[in-house]
Image (cartoon, rainbow, N blue to C red; front, side, top):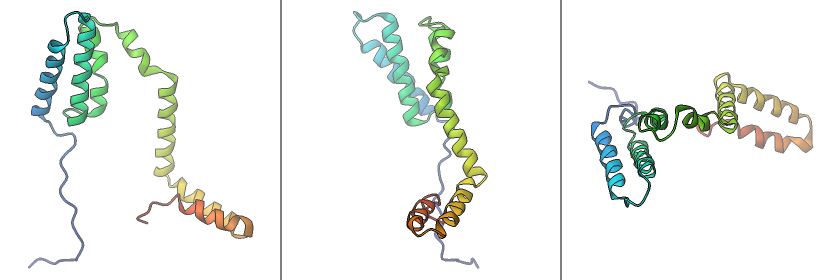
Length: 150
């Protein structure tokens, strides 16, 4: 006899990193289609880049391979097809803005991992508790640090 707790069980999710051969094939076909459908007056390398862009877009949308791996395709394909050297292709990946965003994401993950957002909220509420002018704002801003389901 099974016991029912009344809680709704979440629907089984599809593994995001599962191997998807149809998506891989679809990406290659779309890429080749774009390459061959573009006019021959367009430079050969431009048609190659358009095909690679469509391959990446298809694989991103269908998640045929993990998205981080898809984003690295130009590092492999551009030198392979002699579109650009590895150094020229890798330069945009090392832009200062990329590292700025990466640093912000890592700080956010660390803040969440060590519950610093909750500590900050508690300290803000304690600071505002004795000051009538800050009390309402402190509770409002402090509460925004907690997830809605808590």
